[in-house]
Amino acid sequence: MDPVCVEFKLQTLDEKAQDLLKAALKDPRSVDLEKVSNAIVDQALKDSAFCKEAGRICYTLIKEEAMFSNTTVFRRNLLNRMQQEFLAREETRKSSVSQWVCLVNFICTVFDYLKVKEQPMAPLVNPVYDCLFRLAQPDALTNEEEVDCLAMQLHRIGEQLERVEADRMDELFCALRDGFLLQDGLSSMARLLLLEVLEYRAGGWVLSDRAQSYYYSEVTN
View 1 (tube, helix red, strand yellow):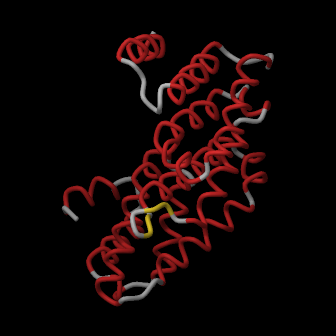
View 2 (cartoon, rainbow, N blue to C red):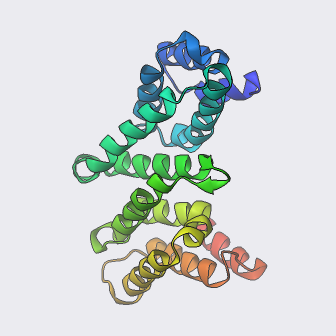
């Protein structure tokens, strides 16, 4: 990995965590990889900018570990920690919607980057879907931060998820259509985001130039 790129991705971490990750990227055998995975998850849960990049860092560390030592310590600890956070997701949401959104962003980003023989990791499919279904619940649809997260992740990984399990994507979009059409209390921005993502999937996970110009000019305005 390009050192400049690494610096960019690690700059929001405290100095100790930066040093730990830099050492891990240089030689995974030189550090405690459980501490590394915890440092990544801890930062991702409080820093939305970092969690967007965390998937690439995890992917790189898994490759480096396999190259240097042919072990899976980092991946195992990462997935275990993600499972713990996933199981506590309702408590996280109750205490902080922003932290909950960061958790969803992190799980989806890791799903996007980590592959097994070019296919999504099976253990992550259901947790990702469960997170997206939670964002489609009535109480979440009235929160713009959650709707924005839902739309962003469907843009990022919706097509991948549909290829893996199309029936659940159909269920999810039925819920989104019902929310858009029937639910009271949606803000104009939430309605715009929902309409855009409904049209995005209906177009085969592509927006026409005209639709893209319309939606993104509305968001800007």
